[in-house]
Length: 168
Image (cartoon, rainbow, N blue to C red; front, side):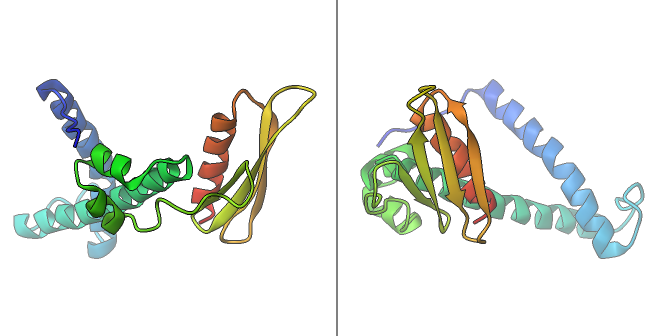
């Protein structure tokens, strides 16, 4: 298994960025829970304030898990195996299969099609311009279309995947 490590400086920058992102969320959650304006919401029992921050981290954790599953599904849609997903995450093939059971799917029914987040997308090369475009229907029934002009199938797939994630 491959282990990914970051430098001490990268760790500090990551922690700063996460705290910067968390603070507005924690303030909004705390303000809604207490009815206090956001500028006064920290003026309370320190344990209650700390518990509000912990609750906000739980929301972040859930979003990270959702985004992680989306990244695994995207890799799987491009043919990554559970062994590769496990290596990227630092776990075994079996661990990856248990963590993301739907990530490695059966091959698409047609070349150039994606099945992600409960929706489907078709990738098409425009013979005249040489660019790629996509059409998709999300799990919520919403349809979308990307303009011709993506330089590669992979870029068109990334845009289609983003649409499917938004409408999953």
